[in-house]
Image (spheres, rainbow, N blue to C red):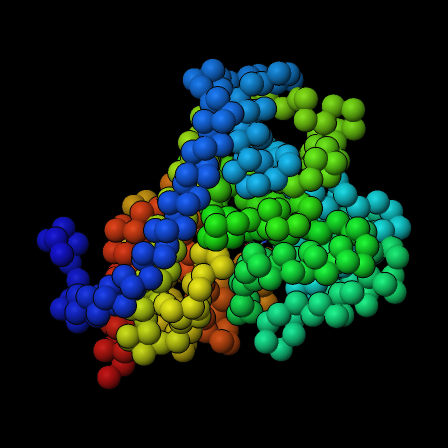
Length: 424
Ligand SMILES: *Cc1c(COP(=O)(O)O)cnc(C)c1O
């Protein structure tokens, strides 16, 4: 190691041990990265991306060549018929909400088959207790849910029964990533099997919350029978360069509907000035397979290191990855705080600040977060979050490049080891 950052001998030796174990999985990550990188490069070549695509439209943004070309690039790379990728989606939740409102109409039912959705989606559906904000429920759209089975699988027989019994079910909704829960994330193959089962009963719209899943496998949900998927550009598909935004990809007819919701009926995708964001969105999407690979290496290394320190990582270094998230059980509040302190110390931005637990709106307990990122709240950059409650797990994700993120993880290990030394 260099002399620029200093780590104790104990951490250096644990690091070497963890590298030996982690490296066994790097070849597989590289294989997927190369496959996805070629897929993306080929979409750039086929769609004749050129300097003219990076221009900045203003006003209505009619005929923005970059915007239109990028939609084609994203659709082709994801294996979808069509796509919308915009900096003007405020976040992943806004993007997913646009897709839900784009497809669902009064009287329809949305059936979520992966248990309770990600926290911020619940108010969109209207199951978080609030009223009058214009949720799906306020528009007369019903919601039903099927929980995952005890071993974390989608209950396919229950899904088929629900579809047969309730003709109002217009959409079957799947959340691919675990989000901030401890359930396993779903593989693209499993998602494809569910889509097939749905279509065997009738042609309901299958939609996937694809957050954190992009480029982790060689296929995306829309290339295995899913109708619509959406995600955030400050996660995997923004490649760390998109400063904000989201994407929706899938069947042409549904993308059209989403476009009318994204702007207004009549105008749809014909408007939307890009204001100079095209270059970052193109470049970010181009880098996304590689950056996702770096985040995966970071996750595997962190799992191996904290396993060697006696903590319980999920997934383990050996388990196949379905998203970029790594949870680690740290056993108590002090360790969670120490871990986040370490991640912050090893970040390129705001390394000098000390994260503190706070009462985050919508959480029943204090939460601590570490984020020394170039883009506020970006979780494709190395970042960690931990609610200070049972099971005392930290959720770690991102890493624009493995070498830097590895140093962040080593700082986290150093801080956690200090806590146990101070105690003894
Ligand atoms: C990040 C995420 C979202 C969207 O969250 P935003 O913070 O609004 O971008 C939705 N679902 C899952 C599973 C996520 O990880």
